[in-house]
Image (cartoon, rainbow, N blue to C red; front, top):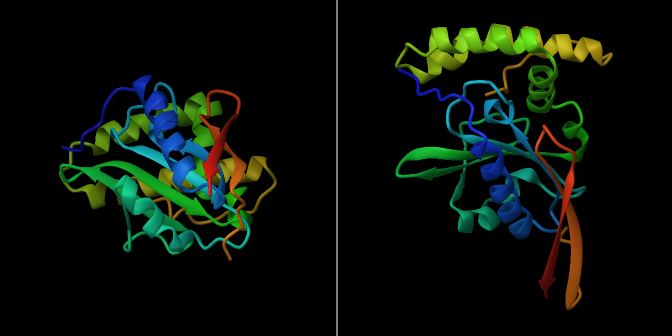
Length: 206
């Protein structure tokens, strides 16, 4: 069976902890980190994996962050979508974190953020998605589980896009360095979806 857990408040804490670590190593390369995926939605069952979305700053290649992230245990997911970069962190061969990095032009309307927002504000969408997940979790085939969720994900995603005046889309992807002085500061917005944005200020000696 697919491992699904009841929602845990500890997931929000885990997001904030990981966002702080990522903000440190990606200082000057990303300017926003948000909690996405089912663990970001209170009341929703989820795989115990923390999904994060980061917005790369202008001129930064999202696919070129592997060397910086390696020290935190992340590896590029070469089999992931080509529309944005995906990095995976595992412990004892089990995924614990998935980081999605988007270019600044793709950030505002990326599927992952819009789908999360739909689940956060629409109780009916949350219920339908949870019921489907619980039904499909009986399988041992992770790929089949993901594929079977896709039609509902796409329908809910496009409901959210329509509400924002955006055209429908497919949900297939659901699944130059700045100069620094001796000391510089930068701000990266880190947001858990249930609260207001907070700002982590990173101070680093050059």
